[in-house]
Amino acid sequence: MSSRRESVIVMAWTTLGCTPPGPGFTLDEAGSDDASDEGDSTATTVDADGDGDGDETVGPNDVPFELVSAAMNLTGEFIALRFSEPVGSLEGVDPSDFRISLALPVQLCGGSGDCIDRTDYWDANFYVEYHLTYDPYYGPPPDGDRFEVDLLAPGNMPTDVILHFAIPLDPALCEYFEGYPDALYVHFAPGPIPLRSADDEPLAAIGPQWVDFDGPAMDVYGVFPNLDPQVLVPCP
Image (cartoon, rainbow, N blue to C red; front, side, top):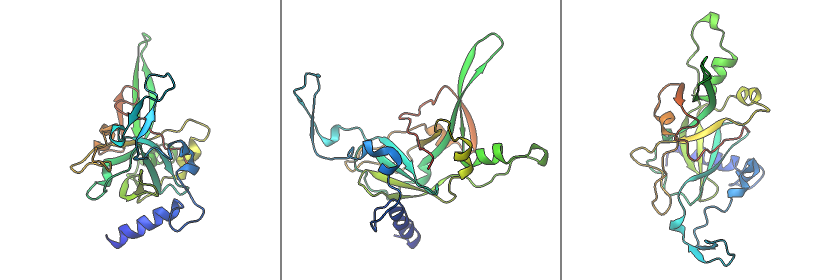
C-alpha cells in the first residue's frame, strides 16, 4: 500500500470516528442510521406472505448488492457510502467509476402547453463557479477545480466505502441551496474491475451516463433516467 493511500485511509477513518476512537463524523450521525445493520451476513427470517408467522429464510446471497445511503463529512472532502452487504476488495477498482452529480430536474414547456422532462447534471463545484461567481462580461467560465473522486478506501464498517475528493466540495453550494431539497446524487459506472460484494456480486450501474461523460455539465431527457437507486448525499 502506498504511503499516500495509507495516510488517506487513516485520515478517512479518523474523520469518520473509527480509528482512533473519538468524536467525529460518522455515517449514522449524518442521518443514515437506518442502514446501520444492512450488511449483516447471517441468514434472517422474514414474513413472506404477511400473515405474521415469519415463514421464509433469507440468506446473505439473497440480498441484492446495492447502495443504500451516503453521507458527507463536514469539510466536503469525504463521502461515505453504505451498501446492503459487506464490500469485497477495492484492489483495482477505479475511483473514477464513481461520480457525484448536482442533479436538477426541469420541465421544458412549449407554447402549445406540451412539456418535456429533463434532468440537468452538473459537477457541483463547476455549478458554483458558473452560477455564483461567473461574470459573463469577462469571457467563458473557468475550468476550475472539479469535484472528482481520486481515491477509494474501506469504511468503518464492512458495508462501507469511503470516496475521497482531491478538491473538497465548495461550501458555497450548500449555502446557495440552503432550505431547498438536497440535490447531490451518487452515480456509478462499472469499469474493467467492478466493485463487488464480499460474496462476489457486482454492483449494478447507477446513472452511468454522467460517469461516462467528460464534461462538467450535461442534459438528459427524463427525470433521473437510469438513476436507480436514487441515493442523495445531504450537504454537511
